[in-house]
Image 1 (cartoon, rainbow over the protein chains, first blue to last red):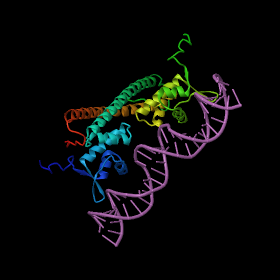
Image 2: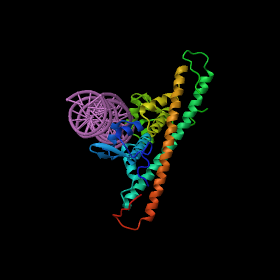
Image 3: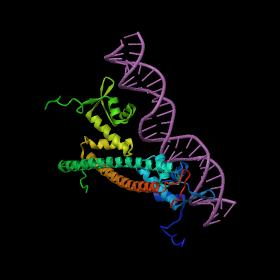
Image 4: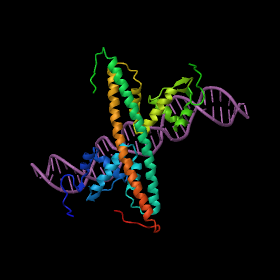
Length: 146
Length: 146
DNA sequence: ATTATACTTTACGTTTACGTAAACGTCAAC
DNA sequence: GTTGACGTTTACGTAAACGTAAAGTATAAT
């Protein structure tokens, strides 16, 4: 396998902190903060942080977790789960339990979201009816909604 | 329609703050805090708060919003949307836009959650396999993982 | 040599969402 | 008449997740 076969656009092997910050739409401060909390651990070249593809993947997971409303602490646990270098059977079992727990939380959240979505959809169509029917006189009249 | 026909168990008409707190698993401090932020507005009997069924419904929405990771500010906006007493066409249109915006956010979140769920499910089954197969050796057992 | 650019650490500031104590009112029970 | 359960307001405290200077380092370009 040629090691340098994929070092152009998407096959990058290492990234700077600002590259990742821009790619993911966060500040470099945020990324350093995550390191402070033990969520990523990039290599160093002197003092400068060098992020591997794996680090980049972790960042992706972190930010998705954040979008889902998890705390950084939870996310740290989940990340530790995804890479079970802690080999003992006890650790694995613990990890498994945490995963299942997390899964249940997510399923609950999905249900919540589905409820909220249908309620919102109902609300929206009601609003549209309202606007369609009673829209005869008004100054700030703004109709086309699509 | 007999007005008192439903005043027993589930047909309650008013609630105290601790009743609601216990029902929803929060502290009364939390509920008062929500009032401070304008999310609920219970009646008063003297100084004591009296919560109607409608208030109770609002609380339910608030807490679901919280589970979904929304800020109280966002939740307040959403609540204001659900009750469009603001009659002008401009207000309604604004409300409609906000609703649709919110709907998109929720749909994105649902997609995120679905991703996270399947990844977690994969992770769980892998962990289970690992536990089932490699469970022969003892405590300090550390296997190199892919 | 200096300017520019990107990176670093240290550290105090800020917002959100409550917790927690202090100090008091009210009503029924003992 | 005081104990206890439940309610109230006021107000300081706190943890999480960064923002935001402040001040220095490193490298490349001018």
